[in-house]
Image (cartoon, rainbow, N blue to C red):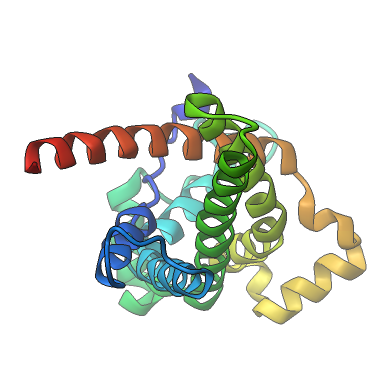
Length: 225
């Protein structure tokens, strides 16, 4: 239960619905979008998601980096925030509203990479498997999700690491200074520290969210018809 005790705010997941809406606006809905259209759709969806979700992202990393649930005997570390809304309020009061978008450039960059790699690679893997008849149905979805999540995690984890340290105001360093500090003190491979749990979380999220989304989409299409 301690894993959920801090109750951090969930990240706002905008990209998938936005991507589908943009996909419908791109042209004939019965025609499969070409690669360039998929990339534009994913890029726009990622930017929308980053813009909407950055405040909760800042609150999330601040809560995760906050003091322990109970005062530490060794250092008696105080907790800065009592919860999600207290964190949002104190960030605005002490640092200004603009602080909610601290690290917004990194958040948008990460969201763009995640959206492009996740949406595009998932679609491409599904199409390749369908053409070669390697898998179909639920097994196809799970296989495509695992491959897509692996590529997405590999690309986005380094940016996520720098973004998290910057949003928590890690020793007052700039983004470039944090990057250089990690390279010189920890080595390049440190950017992928925690890759396994990061990948597992992303794979599970992709599998579950897309299954639910596909089911809801089918219900919508059935009722519309």
